Image 1 (cartoon, rainbow, N blue to C red):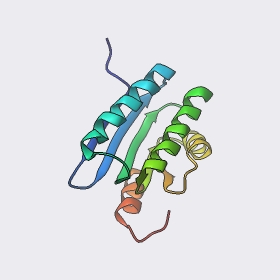
Image 2: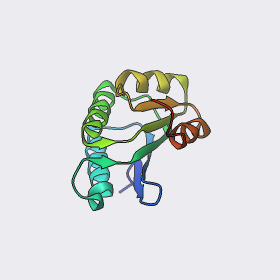
Image 3: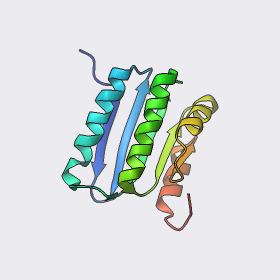
Length: 128
């Protein structure tokens, strides 16, 4: 059995959820990812939550439409339960275009470098 194509962890000190996404996913991967997200934030209690998110998807392929749309729905559901911003770092302009098409919430931005994403998250005075 191979490891899942994602990792999720919550940093309590920084109040930030980190996750990494790799490869080409199936809907089963999406379901596993949702479970990992829930497990990571379970210790925080009940929503609404207040944390930022940082996604490293530089090794994440352009996804099939069903996977891409499901990830957009996860982003929308997350936004309904929490405050904070989400920075997604992608590995190519094609990935950036797909992410911008599916991740439309006002608190989510897509970046091509980790430095840009970290700067945006660390500067709480900027509007998304």
